[in-house]
Image 1 (cartoon, rainbow, N blue to C red):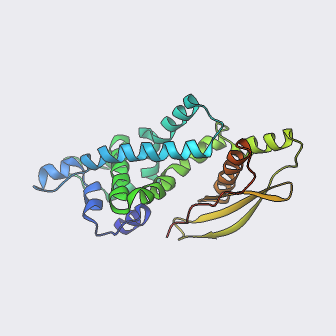
Image 2: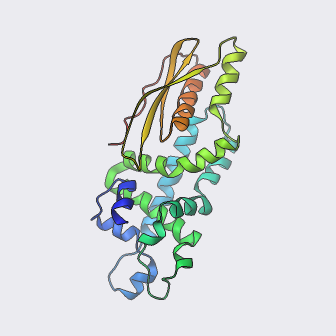
Image 3: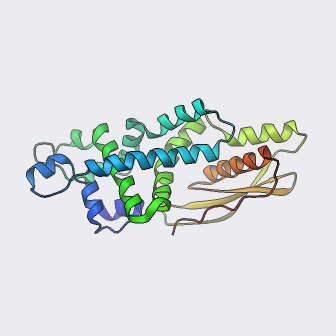
Amino acid sequence: MLDRIAGLVGVDPGSPLLAQALTHRSYSNEVAATPHYQRLEFLGDAVLGLCATELLYGRYPGADEGTLSRHRAQLVNTEALAAWGRGVLLGDALRLGRGADSAAFRQGSSVLSDAVEALVAVAYLERGLEGARRFCQLLLDPALDALEEGGALDPKSALQELVQNRGGATPRYEVRDSGGPAHDPWFLVSVQIDGRPAAEGRGRSKRLAERAAAAAALRDLQVGSGAPKAPSEPPP
């Protein structure tokens, strides 16, 4: 379990910071001199907010401040973070005091969301801002996918509407590359407009990579440039 959580965060399973991020205050109260995750949670909250803001700002250039703020709140709220934690069985990895060690407590939204924020801090402190961005992308993709599936955010539809309004054909998407371990795959997709490469994007699924490519193409079109943007490096 610890190895899997470490792999998701991108740090060594033996990291003292990782152990701290998985330690609840109730455990520290019973085992003297064992640091708990509250300080890490404080830092992780700020880092997660920055990474979520960057992601939304870059991916949805047509959205105004109010829209971006609402969607950021949907991505990083307690229930969204806890849902991710439940999905990766984070509760099973937590160190709890005897008085708090119950299935219900381990799966509590507040406990899980706090631990997730602490893990973000670990990624930041051990791997720097780029490491934190990678983990936050992994963390936020499911919630972002849900927003897009619900129609709240849909760069592919926005790109198609913009291109067709200008007299162009429907954009086409092509998978150019893929890789990564089974638990953290990535795909590189290019989008073509009128037969010419317009942009590229990466994502943890083909669908997310297509949306990232569409968002990049939207940015280019809105600033009057058709040159494709180079995608960020894939996770190691």
